[in-house]
Each structure stands twice: as C-alpha cells, then as structure tokens.
Amino acid sequence: MHDSRETPVPAAFVAGFPIKHSRSPLIHSYWLRLYGLEGDYRKVEVSPDDFASFLGGVKSGHNPYRGGNVTIPHKEAAFHIADVRDDVAGRLGAANTLWLENGRLHATNTDVYGFLANLDQHHQGWDRAQSAVVLGAGGASRAVVQGLLDRGFQRIDVINRTEARAQELASHFGRVVMGHAMDKLHDVLRDTRFLVNTTSLGMNGQDVPPIDWASLSPQAVVTDIVYTPLETGLLRQAKAAGLATVDGLGMLLHQAVPGFEKWFGIKPEVTEVLRQLVIADLEAHG
Ligand code: ATR
Image 1 (spheres, rainbow, N blue to C red):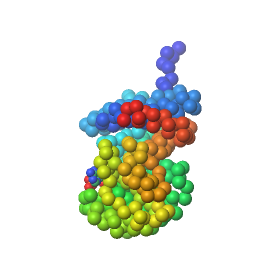
Image 2: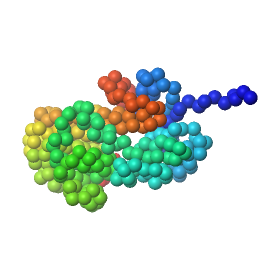
Image 3: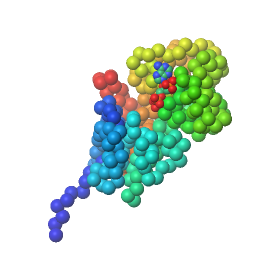
Image 4: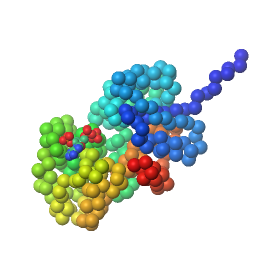
C-alpha cells in the first residue's frame, strides 16, 4: 500500500514569553543553510500556564519537534519537567536546551558552555586569572560562576544590589564564592584580573557603578554578558582605561552550538560571518 505520509522536516523550537526579539532563529537558520541541511527552527510564544502542556505535546509527538531552546521565563520549569537532566543543568537548576532521545525529554544548560567558549575564542588564556569579580546574582550570574568554577578559579567575589541574593548564591556554590553588597565593589576590584557583568545594567543606557579602573590589574580582562549595545558602558570604560575586553554577543552564538548539534547532527561553527549577520540584525531591529 502506498504511504502518502511525508517524512517530516527535522524541527526545533525556541519557546519564551515573549519571544518576538529572539535572535536564535537567525542563528539556527543560518547554520541550516550553511550546512545544506533540511530543517526548521521556529519561534513559539508559550505562556507559563501553557508551558507544561507544550512540552507534553513535544514528548507525545503531537508537537513535531526533536527538541528546542527555552528562554525567559521557562528555564526553571523546563528543568523540572524534563525526564533526564545532565550535571550542568542540575547544578544550575535551570535548562535552556531540550532534546528527545528514545521518547524521553533530556535537558541541559548551554549558557556555561557559551560563556566559556566566547572567552576562549576572543581572549585565549583569560582563565589564568584564577580570581574574578562578578556583578549580579541572578540566573545568568549562576551560569557564569559555574563556568569560572569549572575552570578552577580559586576566588570569586559576587557583588549585587541586593546583598542577600549575592550571599545566597555564594552559599549555593561553596566557599570559593563570596557574596557582597555594592559598597564592597571598590575593595574587591583591587588587583583583579577578571571582571564580568551579568546584570542588565548597560542595557537601555542605564549606567554602570563607579569603578576605579586603575585599581584593577593592568592584565585584567573585562566582559559583559549584555550585548545590546555591543559595547556596553562597562566595556567602553574598560577599553578607555587600556584593559582587554570581550563583548557578550559570542556567548549568545556559542550557547546555540550544542542544541544545533543535538537536533541536526552537525557541530556548527561560530564564525565572523555569523557574528556580522547578528550585528546587522541588532542594528536594524534593536
Ligand atoms: P538574569 O537571569 O538575567 O540574571 P535576574 O535573575 O532577574 O536575571 O537577575 C538580574 C540581576 O541584575 C540581579 O543581580 C539584579 O540585582 P538584584 O538581585 O538586586 O535585583 C541585577 N540588576 C537589575 N537591575 C539592576 C539595577 N538597576 N542596578 C543594579 N543591579 C541590577
């Protein structure tokens, strides 16, 4: 008997609420074209109330996806709903990448990978610093701190507007990590060789806290996970003080790599062409 069903095109989703501004489709469609793969990567807006049933549909095959990315506000829910979670997702309590394997929904968190791969690509040897100052104590900060711990950092000072949150993060990770209020910023920055901003400061023109750049080590590397604008106030000031900087766009590009490989079977490369494509889109659409 003739089977008229067509083999479905391999598809992945990015689910968020809202999802309009996600750049992930641009990145994954570029790779699909570049490697000549048949596939589809779709934005889906899913409200928190509908998220569990959306993933239920993915598992049952009703929603025809091999997996996908999840973003704000679904990262914790995705972690809890998944059947299998890897170590890194477990340590963060949040997942951003899902895939089906033998009918089970697997979860990982590629933000740590993205953070590290961006720095490795743009400033080799950055991790020799071994001590770091991290601004912010939210979800993004956890991924950054985990990455620094994975690279063997011996001391990580987390500074946050809400001190209690910094201390909570510190106690989650153990004694290498210390939590402080903003007023300790000046003290902890002395001689530091690595500074990273994980807060939304620097977006929408919000200003950075006052920093005495001369007190950092002259070898310091300064990075920001914010990439709109590409050169945040923090990076602009650090550069003007003669310090090395790495912008946050590469974290977005690299965090997409493991998901693409899981769904479409090829480990894609983060190239300058891709970076320029995303920069052009950011300039066109903000
Ligand atoms: P994300 O998952 O992106 O990290 P989050 O969990 O909401 O988002 O965390 C946002 C971080 O930015 C927090 O560290 C927050 O500080 P508080 O814990 O005190 O809220 C920080 N942040 C946001 N706006 C800020 C501002 N205007 N000044 C200082 N810190 C700010």
